[in-house]
Length: 268
Image (cartoon, rainbow, N blue to C red; front, side, top):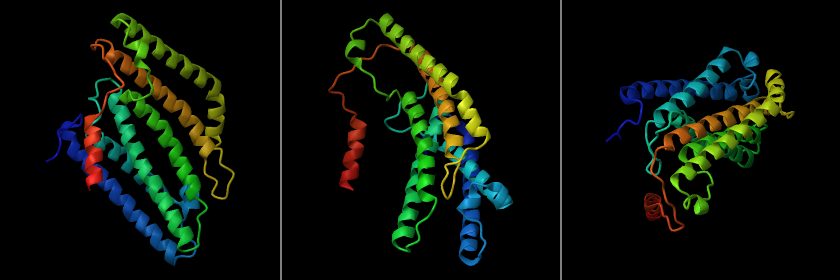
């Protein structure tokens, strides 16, 4: 039985259908590209995939199909709440949940890329020029988006020894101070790195290797964008938690749901 909708409501089914349509288009184009790679001499390869001008319309359609698949898969999967996830209650929580689902899908993509590389290298003795760099490229976005998800889940490192002894007004003051420090850090980072990130992004600075992906041109800008998103999420957390009752933590806290899942996995 399908779980209750978290935020999409009646839009869950249309979003699911759109997601499947994008995934289907992506799979069909991928199959066509693989077929051509096997039987056509000058077929489109990974070199053209990051250079749409050289690959033509089919590469552009493929890239948009991949983007649509990730976006609508993130929207659809964010409508389901994990057993150990808190209920979203901040004004920015849904956005962070969507990006977290995209991040999870990207982890699976890294596994597939490395699996392809292992088979190609050790079974067919034909190592790729792009698998390692593509995995690094995807992993950099996973690392950044995971920080946003950690902030939304309040799962970043916090020391409660002194915090729990404070009265509620002092806890609120501490939360406000920590959020201010995050805002100040973000302002300093953007102030110092904006021009460099803009320059690299405008010229799409590449990695300087055989495949030559634009890692510096995309990742440097992504760092600034994601840190701004993390800051917005921190402000959302502060507003959402402002009137909540104080929580007390102990070193003996155990997540029973997670323990039960681990036991089920071991039994299987």
